[in-house]
Amino acid sequence: GAVVSQHPSRVICKSGTSVKIECRSLDFQATTMFWYRQFPKQSLMLMATSNEGSKATYEQGVEKDKFLINHASLTLSTLTVTSAHPEDSSFYICSASVLILAEISTDTQYFGPGTRLTVL
Amino acid sequence: KNQVEQSPQSLIILEGKNCTLQCNYTVSPFSNLRWYKQDTGRGPVSLTIMTFSENTKSNGRYTATLDADTKQSSLHITASQLSDSASYICVVASGGSYIPTFGRGTSLIVHP
Image (tube, rainbow over all chains, first blue to last red; front, side, top):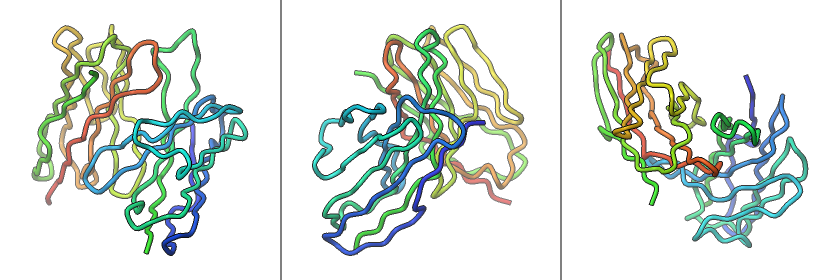
């Protein structure tokens, strides 16, 4: 099956620093990648959607200047948390999908294993 | 507004017992419904996916049902194992949009 990896799996940083998280689709080309944030015992919250080569679409309430998303290729998307603060501590999960327009009803998102960010 | 409601919020059962998780949705137009299993500290893993014309689908000890008329789905777990302890998330996709609506999940704990 399709595999999505994330790196790093866990990161601890000081307040004010920037952290980059990578999301890679290992055995398929992803037309779209999604970034989610999940707080303890809560559901996944979509942050942004990105398509290769174009600007990401951010959900309401998500600061695009704070959460920089780059989708440089069909297999790699990065999320950079700039000037991180303790309230940014969370579990960040990416997912990748291949959208076949003729079969939109069966598109599937493949999730990465997640990245645990702790900001001190 | 598209919504997905799951119940119960949490569930504790003994190993070997069966259980059923519920998902009600108001997503329209409906495209497909997925059940995911998310272990603590891990990303979600797909269990089943059903489109409008499917009303049951199995994956090992997991059986999902879908009633598109009442907009309800259930996930039945048979002969539960300790490794079934996880959060189970119902996700509904809307036709014409590839951004799905997530439920809050049901936290299942299986005790020996």
